[in-house]
Length: 140
Length: 95
Image (cartoon, rainbow over all chains, first blue to last red; front, top):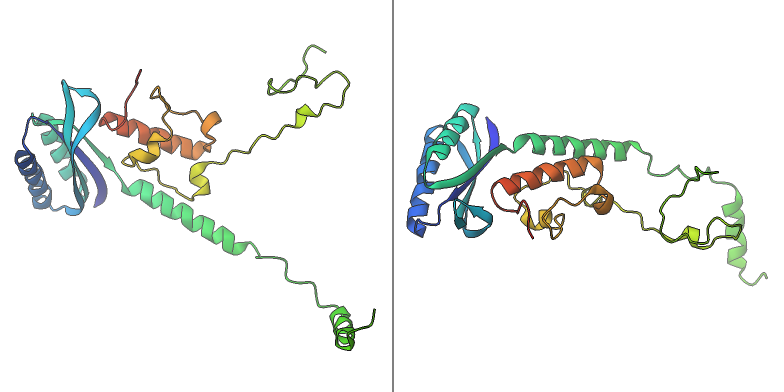
């Protein structure tokens, strides 16, 4: 099982309910295929940074799922075929996370290895000497 | 004598002709990689706010020489921006 981010852009020609229905279809497809859904976020109708097929807006929906590669391939195939989907992006998210976890670990170990500070110089007899006059007070 | 190293052309007018050039030692703030400083390892392509800070007006990717990002993070930033572009979260170009 691998972790994937799948972002789907639906045409703005659909109504809110229709868009919700379409995303529900994909959700069903994912869960039926044995995927665990981590995040399931409708971003709503957003303005596109540039027009796609003459549309200036789209419904965005993000899934973050833990699934097997063949399932994601199948979902992607359907996303490509669907006319309601303007565009989609499915990328692995676990590799990056794993690497960053590793990196964090390495930094921690390095920090732990580095001695916090050279331990204090073996106490010289001076402190004892200093302590004595301090009790006397006005010696200056 | 022709191959005199002259780095950072600006702000060193009176540098080379004998005078004790004071201007030579202008302070240049050391740039630090934003991601290293904040200990962010993972550059998320969905975080448009963050990515937008590395996109100047024209829509191009801010070069390392200006942003100060380290090689590793610039590379990650680059892929993140390109991914965001592919789904129209960020523009390819604007004018």
